[in-house]
Length: 441
Image (cartoon, rainbow, N blue to C red; front, side):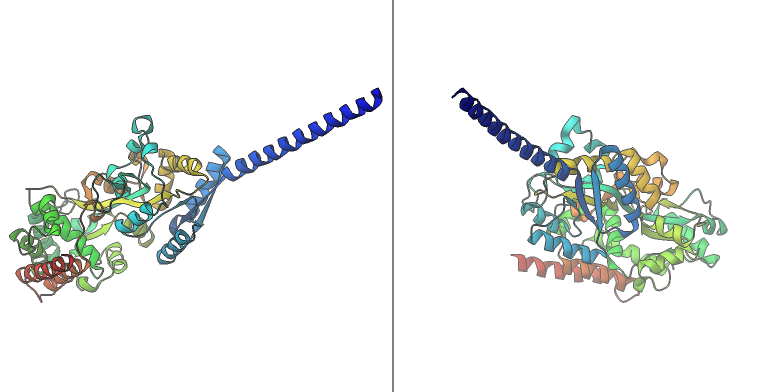
């Protein structure tokens, strides 16, 4: 009897141990599986010129943290955009991705629950992460209180680099025309006077890809901000100030004056930016209007090009010169990701100074971390020094009708080739504006 009881007890204890062991192993396996899943995050991007740099950073991060970062390249940008949209519809977005499109596209992703709100992370430790980044770059990824897209206020993306558009000058060509290369024009009058010296030496003045009309729009809005100030520009977009206003006529007249003074390169209104870049890189124009991405382009075309960066010369001293700029490329975190904290930690790491300096040197781009400027090439530092002067239509809070923008930009092309006067353009754009506003009502 005792023997049977002992066997029963042993059998019971063995069974209990077996059950406990099974539960323990299942739990350990589950925890290990979760841990394994958390050790890998996936990032989609479209930046083929940064693929090698991203892969190197991925290796470094895995060595430092044990977490593998899978960068997956999908290019060109149109193919990437289509893939992201399709993935959103099928709920198969990666842990981290970027959005290529206008602010309204960004807003639609946020409102549909595809993008994680980073505001709390940005504000931790008295805003330690947020304060490292250029404010004007971060603002591209933010939605303010009362925004027209009805998105909850907050930060929804992280800029990994920044960009802005300025003017560049060829120091050798200015010197050849008797102009001190260390003293580029700061005012419109100085620009016109220097151009006369350039013409006397047979040197072309300004080159830019104005066959791509958004670049015309960019320079025109620069001078609109300079001549009439931000409030009046935005009031025009809202419909409270007409495009026939005398200040807008002054903006349009600058393009007429550039034409009459022979400042513009031949064929500029049909020129794509790649052609314009080749002309400037080959010392065939003294000035260029281009973005900070050009540093890498010029390096490939002519490593010995002797040039520097300057703000467009002011046409008025009433308001400061404001240029287009902000985030170049940004990453967002998938709100449905199982690895949100791992994704946050990586984005904090890649926007820290050592990684930002590495990216800048490898890609000749501007870092989004404002404390990374001292160790980057001088020309990039010159671009970066103007980040406080930047603005962008995506952060204005109001947007102009595409038809108005098209008429505006193509109308400036018509002024340049002598088909329209500034007054005619002001009247025509205003007529289209009024028609579009009637449709909205």
